Each structure stands twice: as C-alpha cells, then as structure tokens.
Amino acid sequence: MFYIYLRNFVAFLLWMLNGNAHYHNKDKILDPSENYILVAPHRTWWDPVYMAFATKPKEFIFMAKKELFKNAFFGYWIEKCGAFPIDRDRPGPSTIKYPTKVLKASNRSLIMFPSGSRHSTDVKGGVAVIAKMAKVRILPAVYQGPRTFKALAKREQVDMNFGNAIDISDIKEMDEAGIAEVARRIESEFDRLDAELEATKGTHRRMIFGYIPRLILLVPAILITLLTVLFTMVAAPIHKKLKKSALCQL
Image (cartoon, rainbow, N blue to C red; front, side):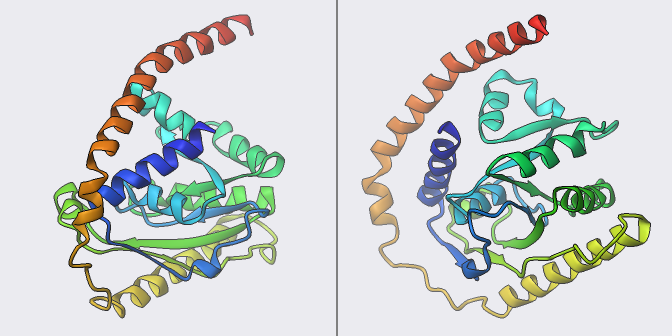
C-alpha cells in the first residue's frame, strides 16, 4: 500500500517540477497479470519513477547497493518502494535467488538497469539468468530527457519509450554465449528505442499556461510533502527496531 502511495507521490512531485513528460508505445507494456523484467539504461535518479508510474498498476522490486540502506530515512523509503540490498563488490546467491523467487511467487515484477555503469556486464548476466530461471520475458525501455535537477526544473522534455518484449525461452543454456545473445537483444532494442525518440524531438509543444495548475497545487504539495516526511521520521526508526528484533529471534 505504501509502495503505491510513494510511487504516486514522487511522480506527483516530478509533475510539479517538470510537467512535460511523454510516454511512447505504452501498448507494448505487458499485461499486469504477467510478471516480467523491466530493463533500461540508467541515466538519471528519476527514470525509475517514470518507469514505475507508466507501468502502473504493476508493482516492482529492484536492486540497490547495500550502502543506501545505512540511512534509516532513505533506506525506509527505498525498501517500501521494493528495493532489496546487494553487495556489488561481493554479490551472493541471494542476488539471483531473491528476485527469481519474487517473480515466481508474487505479483511483483523486477526493474533492472543492465547498462550505464561499470557493473553493466555482470548485471546483463543477472538479467539473463533471472529471466531464464523465473521463465519471464524482458521488457526494454529507454529514458531521454533532463539529466540534472536544474534541467528538470526548466521543464525540458521527458520521454519514456517502451519496446518489444524479449522472449529468451529459445536460448537453452545461460552460458557465456547465451548471456551474450541476451545482451545483444537488449542492446539492439535500446538502440532502436533511442533512435525512435530522436526522430520525434521537437514534436511536442510546451503548454503556455503549464505552470498555472502547478502553482495552484503548490501549497497542497508542500503540505503533503511535510506530512510524508513526518510520517517517515516516525515510522523509519520503528521499522528498523522491528527488523533488528526479528533478526535476533532467528
């Protein structure tokens, strides 16, 4: 329940700040009854929010480096948004086993970013293995738009483009060749989606009075933000204590 609230709350804040988002090929998004791995090049801090909002009502889990959970406040938020910690320097079996189990046994799908970092090769292998073990399809997407907070606030155009679902059931073994083939299919679709968006640049006009509805909603937005922060300040320490207590009882 809090996942849905946070997803919509952060998407609302992005709309207040930017209000110039455009979603392409939403008909390619898989049915909410089907679990899948949503993959995209990781280009900003906010592209996961646009991805999660575009694919609602589907809910997701995603990997986050364990260091992000050290801050009780931020860790509480990302955990409630579906994040689970991984050790990027020494990834253990749970990095594969946990998301595979969730994909098989729940109605939540998985968001992964298989490129855009020094870990991209390992993550692509993770996408391939998890998809194969969970027997799910891979849905590529790309974000194009502002990559700085300043550019986002200037209402530079945001575009999310969704591609064709990738079925890897024809790949028998997830050995080096099998993983390379999955990576090739993903990268090929990323390139196609980026090129498709480049062709549409400048076709969307900004609304002349686009700031008016956001100005009207500014005060309610500030109040909602303050209430959310206050709730988190109270709930995060309680949540941390309960987790410690549960671990001690194991």
